[in-house]
Length: 520
Ligand code: DHB
Image 1 (cartoon, protein in one colour):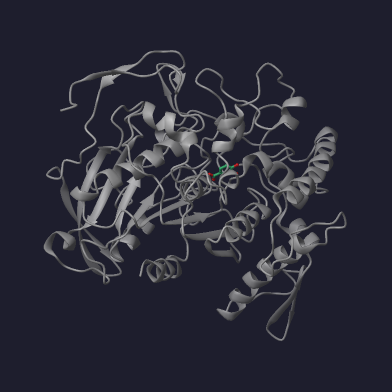
Image 2 (cartoon, protein in one colour; image 1 turned 30 degrees about the horizontal axis):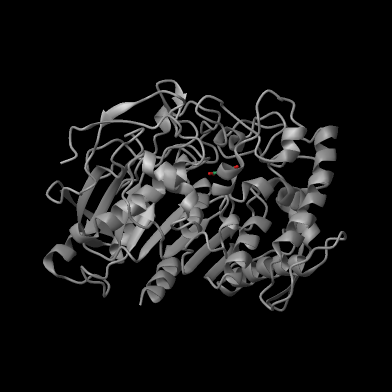
């Protein structure tokens, strides 16, 4: 048995040069250690077997976050079917509670607890870093929890009612500290979630269900992580990190990724943001939800940066060599036209049309950028649309010159709080004391780097949603992700959600209908 064997961590991964000893934990699920809870979903009672506070790594760095709650419909232990699924075919639905690239503890079964008597899921009480929630933009109503992360209990309950086994995984984030060292900086969150996937696969024989049918869900930074789970399966870059924390030695690819408002492609998100919001000098809202309040308008220097970044986007786009749905190369001209602009228009028009078709009233006076003729959406004026949404971040939006963005903090190291992760911001930095983030780590946080390459196994199916009113990143980010995935042969369901801001886990009926269809 591995139990009670002391381990010492390699000093290079998350340890900041501090050797650490602990007790090696078994990776074998103790199948006898569970509780049983009954939840009610749509007036139907569901008995759930709960394995809580399960360490998914053998050498945890921070046990507070590197744990998982596994919720299983009790029916499977009695040879009963749920929604046509059996104890052999039940898919897995993996949630995370990461928001703002902060740590997120394993999600609960109900909003009042996790069914295991463990700590509450949000972890917000321990948040000390800049992205302290304001409460204004978080909480009920937008699908985000008090920590800015996705409130996973609704999707958890829905998944259970649909016969899925829920794996609610915790993950370290940029705020996590141990022995006064940072232990959750990039790529810790994605490494942890990969370890959680591996744990499920490793324990496949001890659990009901089919671990070849794992669906990962997430919102915002958590959506960036579900996207990474879906695009970096088995990629070698992560191997030393997984080894260091004692992750199971299995594959870590998943079947389907679900991502809402993914704050991803961070090293190109600044230029994408300026392509969309460049020329807008006033902020309509402020920064990352729960994050530090940013200025209300752009300084002269930021306006100059905006112009420069906008140009960089064109270069980036050309290098991507992406196609639209008709096989034409995605292009953008300096006047704002091109196949990419046409695609963005199409997505926003589709969004409005769907809303109309579902009976939503769209007042012309409220949407001067939208043309509707006899119930049909015929045009979107992109420039006016972007202006109407407005920017919520200064320039650069993600790799801030003064290192104040949450993303700078995400790319810190065990001993350095924040770093630049683009050479543009590094060379324009007002805080030139630190070196730029390690390029491999920046790559490991960017799904675009792995899609369509031989480095990784990519999920077969992708569900991508972005709010029509969201300005936390550019609409280009989910759109380019979608086209890159399609180009690699992935089945992508990507839509812009009408009259929706920065939110996640909405439209669950439609989501599960699609998930179920693809499981067959
Ligand atoms: C999140 C929001 C942001 O604006 C951002 O920059 C990073 C993360 C979030 O809600 O998780």
